[in-house]
Length: 228
View 1 (cartoon, rainbow, N blue to C red):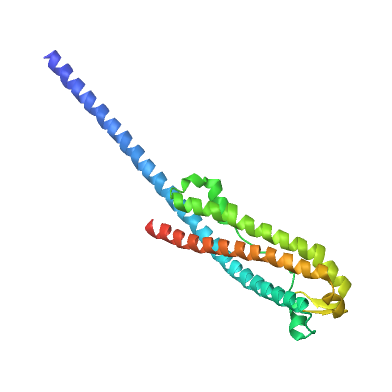
View 2 (view 1 turned 90 degrees about the vertical axis):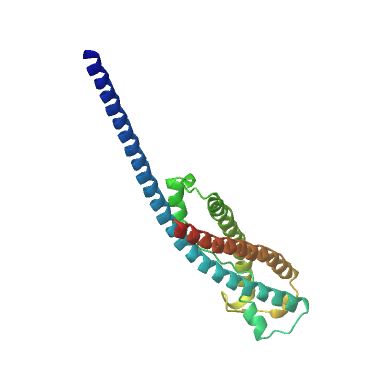
């Protein structure tokens, strides 16, 4: 009788322990699931913020690309005019206000910085993670470096030249030289425009690459958010 009672008690005790273990494991599983859901929601919210930043960047990149393309065309016309010793006219006057300029592209990376704080590795989509890193760590820094190079030429060559050789000049509008004949005979100006045009091509390429990546990222983020 005593042995039967002991056996029953042991079975009961083991059953209780098993139930407790199962309960603990289920609680842990539910907790892990809840944490995973919280993390997924957090990542989704951060991706939405990144998308908003990218939409702003895309508008800015399109604007700067349009502006700098116009400047590039103006520089080509001025270079051709000076090389051919063209007579001063209104087109040349307007183009002289649009050569060797510098424009700064303003970008926002608040969402990306927040994602880095949370841990970039928390974003499990590898292709999206690589694309984000490419845009914020390579494409945008490249754009900013090109802006710095353009600004250096503008401040160190063109502005001093304008102050010395122009009686009136307005950024992005027009330029009235003191002596157009002197400008026609200035080989250093022709060389500066030629070199700057090459640099401007690099700026346009940097804008185009960043714009392409931003556009792709917006689509990828939309896909990721919709799936989740």
